[in-house]
Picture: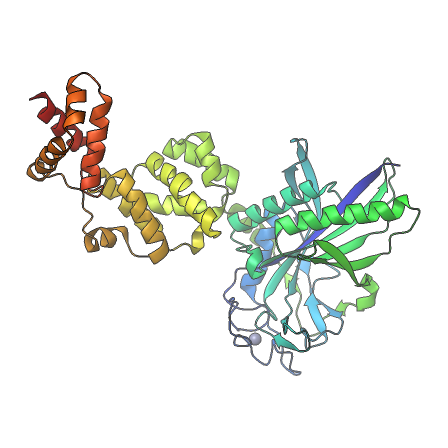
Length: 477
Ligand SMILES: [Zn+2]
């Protein structure tokens, strides 16, 4: 029998706010445990939560960017469960009425055509702390820096049909939320986390099969792999006549397998009820319309603007808008440098190659847009050659020093002094009489060799055009 895969995703995204959801502790990724905490987010009794208005704004923006209907009246519930990373014994979340519902994202499916993925709900909640397990596995410590950080959870309907579609969906969701300035969506820092529900059913059937929930995937690649693994596992069970147990399973990166964690909890297990300490969220239609008008530009619109305003080819515009941080980098570079196509070439070529090798995103790189502009200006001024510029970019990328400073400190300024270059050229002519003869006998290749020698002699600092000119003059005389 042939089976069809049914996937739904639940994505938690940390909101880009200054402070936490119900207290004024900083909402910042921190290496030192428990420094961003207060009695409120540590879960001490008797501390009243106070809702952060900025978080509501971000959640509203997210709901609108994901084409949701917005609830003008929504509120928070307590989701009750015990785990050491949530010391109150309950998580504050929107269970009964989410701020956004019935939205969608359009993605490309495996065949390349557009497919609409429905988003059932977007709700607000607080994040939990984090357990840190000792390598030996005998102790666990708890870090509450993350406790109370504002989150939205974006839940799809079971509309995805393959691991590839799931990956497309996540990439699109990340792009939309980054462009909307809702979240930085950094999976490696946990600001975007994805759980996947997956089941199989006989092809042509409308009923949903018994599903498993997958957790602990820390990259889009891991989401794709864990789903592929789970499809094989569930298919084997079904083919051999068994039943898939509804449970929560953990993806293990090392073994590339999923393992059973626990039976799947149902909504009623959490005994959700309205949080009596928090006032409801009441939005006006005007507030929602204002937020809709102020939605930041999305990737497609920005790419179109790059083509129109900067006369870039469509391909360049698409590459430069692949993430908001890259598009921002490009435009920041243009603040100090006015040739968009040259800036685009250097960013898409040299810079992106360096970022890929280093495995970092552009907003974490020490080669700033101002440095890029500085480098390109020095090339245009004839101070450095394109070849030398690449070496300077290399150095600046790893040290963070400005390109001009590197040029000054290492005395790298291009030699354009006629007298100095003529001296070098005379030396090369004396050193390579064969090449001179070859050139005079009509072998023009020899010219290239002599230019190369002169460049090497000056450690690449000679102005190559000038060397060419002066050498020709010397050989013809
Ligand atoms: Zn706090």
